[in-house]
Amino acid sequence: MLCLCAGAQAQSPTAALLQELIQVDTSNPPGNEGKIDDLLAAKLRPLGFQIDVIPTPVAGKSVLFARLKGDGSARPVLIAAHGDVVGVERDKWTVDPFAGLMKDGFVYGRGAIDFKGGMAVFAQAVMKLARNKVPLKRDVIFLVESDEESATYNTSWLAQSHWDRMDCEFALNEGGWIMTRPNGQVRYVSVSTNDKSSIAILLTAKGTSTHSSMPLPDNAIFSLARALAKLGDYETKVELTPSTRQFFTTLGHTADGPMQQSFADLVDGKDPAKVAAADKAISEDPLLHAIMRTTIAPVIVNGGFRGNVIPSSAEANVNFRAVPGTTAEDLIAMVRKVINDPHVEVTSARSTAAGTKDSPTETALYRALVASANKLWPGVPVTPYLFQAGTDAGAWRSRGVPVYGIYPYPISNEDLRRMHGNDERVRITSLDQGTQLIYDTLLAVAAK
Ligand SMILES: [Zn+2]
Image (cartoon, rainbow, N blue to C red; front, side):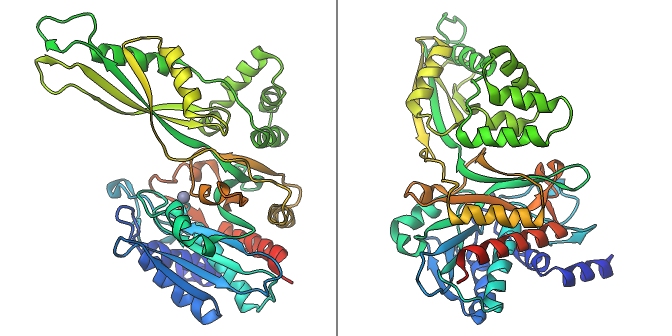
């Protein structure tokens, strides 16, 4: 086994780099992303990159800018990867999550998919540009961000004080997926052109506080429970944006059997009964269920403080992941209508991301991604995509800079479920294909 590992490592520089990156534990909190910055700076500086490590107010947490200079005749292209990862339930893993073990053609470890795998791919691609001494018309900026998974010092923070360093014509980040069929062949490539926004709504049920031995009809906890049950039974309507419409059309063209018709009915949207049936069939996949609508998830419930007191209030924090264009006010109006109970107040808590416009697909960077994907996987469709969660691309999109998201490695549905989960892994051959994809893309947009 050891021999095999060494062999695979020698053959794939991207896998070898990923192994090193995984071995630096950047679970956030606290993150300690500075260690990743040091590791990468030591590799990039000798290749001619201009290195800037920006400290944050938190010790050990920093941001790395590595710039490969062009002649300045075009504006920079930026590629971004976050240095932090989510924590692990170590006892649920069958391998050491911070060893970067190579086994059976995969690299295992926290961040293999999200997003140290992408960081390794992006870093290899820019290092290859430098090693090949490709003459560049624009700067290529490789950014390693902090605090994407949690806390304060993320790209929004960075943009407030260091926008001049981040400013670019367009950027690449995490986002869409290169999905494979069960036989391992690539089925489609999705490139995210927007993220859903995260909107928190607070439900506060009010009632009379009194002794629990003599209950009144206006018990706040019962009111809250009824409100949550109504929301739980409520299904939001299907809302396709231009990018999700194209995405579901692509799924239809690449689906097998009856699902082809379901996707066609969903996109067609004319017959409510057919849409409802298609919604039901497609929603078997929770990811697709989420992409076609605003989702509702209660995440925190609070109420009561003693075993013999009926409290005067109880509250629930409900997290909505909204289709672009939806505002907190829209959601408050919808929730009030569904709950229909004057004892329950519905207010806006906190929005973690403002809605932004879809990044356009008529740019040189998007076209280069499509051309590079077509070269690697002939005949495989490339489609824009609405990312079901949030990334920190909003710092650019909200300033009008197009950002395209991709997890740059072919991946199966089964492996995708390991992201933020246990035994996270990425296929070594996928890392190599991703490196080619990103190298070709950068060559197309940045070479003279
Ligand atoms: Zn991520």
